[in-house]
Image (cartoon, rainbow over the protein chains, first blue to last red):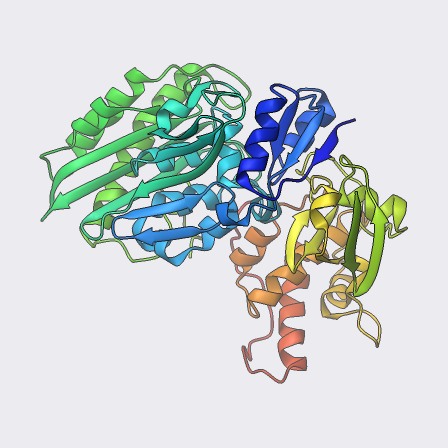
Length: 304
Length: 174
């Protein structure tokens, strides 16, 4: 049975984790770690409680940069009005993660550091140019978020290092983003395919774009060449289809209970086209503010 | 680790091991067995309680992190006069069959009505999407929450909606 260390400061937490490499694990919301310890997937000798480090929770806007503390709960992202207006992909990813109960517990940092390939938050953060701010025994460093992920369940964090914040870029105007996913069930399910897209426009013309995928590669996958397909266009159906085809070619899904590899590749093509289109509608002011996209991008008769 | 917490308004002080969950604490230490031991993976919602007013799955909530916080369980929702509106509506709508999911369903509904006095059917289905029922089916549960919202608005003297509760024709799949 694990023992507990409750730090007063970030420095104490880092010091303890560095002194107990492999034996001490940080615990925030616990929604993954408690299950992992029950199943034997994780066997920590020490749990380091993150909950006293309250300064790592919360969302802070400064111009075009919005800093999300690693201990911010998923539910807080879902309900944040600034994110709703300026980083819709994040809100859409948050609102389909687990259940209300899970979202009240789980944190953004935990969702990233557990490094599940199908995690909801990474693609949405990646299309907002997210950075991972890391503090460790050697001081602070920042890396592009994509470089945090090493493989399923593995990050590039060194012993003693903690993810502390995730700054993202939120364009003041003329930007839009979207997160869509394919699942077997509408809720309480992991993504079979997760797709995030963002665009910035001048008038109706796309000046820059991002596409990122979840659940179709060992790590969350930014696909620059897919995004490039719509730059300079007015997000025509043809450009969106080309972006989808490129994303489909770039991913490397596996076959499992949530779909075959072939099926997932086809879903990627469709969802990338839809997500880009919705992001463009938002960027051009043609999408009602604060209204989330349907989970898979298609309105059903009973959506309201 | 010694923690102090409030459960349904009562203060407790207990010694807890680092790996015991709030569910273990409630059921095995405090003897509050209304909260159910279901899947233990956070999927079924049978163990839902309110932590500082927000619904959480107590099977994944480590007990030491509840230090200094306020917990509400199914034992804490009844009013002085008996059942509260949500409990009463579950009874009158036949929204329980085996009843195992009911405490979690009611706690999730309590949290919803606290923030959304007059929820739509879609909002109810989303709020309860983390609570699985394997026998009643969800329609009567949704009916019960609609009814409870209506009854609670009436009790508070609000005129939120003069419409009697009724389900919309096609619901969100949960």
